[in-house]
Length: 367
Ligand SMILES: NC(=O)c1ccc[n+]([C@@H]2O[C@H](COP(=O)([O-])OP(=O)(O)OC[C@H]3O[C@@H](n4cnc5c(N)ncnc54)[C@H](O)[C@@H]3O)[C@@H](O)[C@H]2O)c1
Ligand SMILES: [Zn+2]
Ligand SMILES: [Zn+2]
Image 1 (spheres, rainbow, N blue to C red):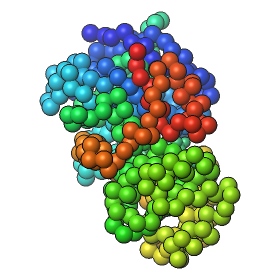
Image 2 (image 1 turned 135 degrees about the horizontal axis):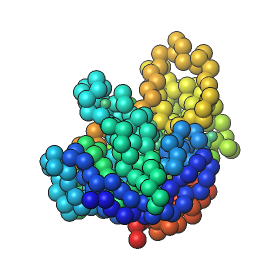
Image 3 (image 1 turned 135 degrees about the vertical axis):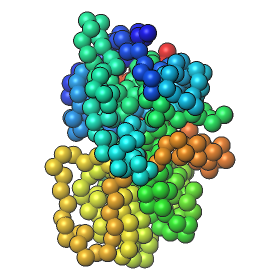
């Protein structure tokens, strides 16, 4: 049975989101139908809106959905109607990287998360005239009142998890915390710098505190963000508009920092990390760069440093998201403090507030 839904549709690069009535296909045997409660706004949605990542327009974005399962496909086990869930990225489950347990590096990641169709090539969405609309964004397209997801990219939330704000655990928050805890595996007593203190960077800072890093340096160009970083665990903050971050990091660490996480994707910021890190340092890049961004190779060669381009914090969402919820419940991962909620139809206000720095993680709540 199809479902009539209301969705925010993006019809082209730099277009605003338009609210439209669409028809959502019947679920296939390996899928579930989720009534979306709320959905986070991630910078990656905006990267598609602005053409930094190619999109299959018209497209329903949204990839930090949380909600309640309404219907379960015949071949799905482990889920039932009424389950509270968070939706995460899609992976095929059968390529060499998925089989190795590295689903964030699924060989089919781009097709499954950005291609607009299911793995079998069918679309889940159509408009009032019956024209196909691209869906399946990150295996969900949750800027909508309902979404279809493959059971593989659905995570059952533990009892007591705050459903309304749990969607961002499926991307931005998981990415920041996971990059520090999984990809960099930051050990207790070490030093780390995080450039860009938006939702991903601040989650990285909370992750660094959980890991026991003792020097946690936050770099941004917005003072309010840096004040927030200090509240969440940064031991030092640098506004790189006002002071030279490399000199300051050298001074703080006495010769270079051990770990670095870049969430800006800005080439000169990344270059500064190569200058501010010590021999043996590990540098993780997660920010989406503007197409064509380049780096001077002289910064990398013979420096004895490791660079990792990390996706989704190397997380297995089904195990990592419950860990983050447990840390939240223990008072050690206060991700609720990042969130400001908006009614779904206020998506443009949410985008403007995120751009101005007023809001860190906007979560759109369905009517
Ligand atoms: N690799 C992944 O799996 C993955 C997952 C989620 C998000 N992302 C990407 O991570 C990035 C961060 O996402 P977000 O939601 O936190 O974005 P955001 O816009 O909330 O945060 C970015 C922060 O960087 C700061 N910044 C911008 N330019 C800067 C500069 N020159 N120097 C210092 N700070 C600067 C901004 O002020 C802002 O606070 C985005 O590019 C997003 O697309 C990647
Ligand atoms: Zn795969
Ligand atoms: Zn995202």
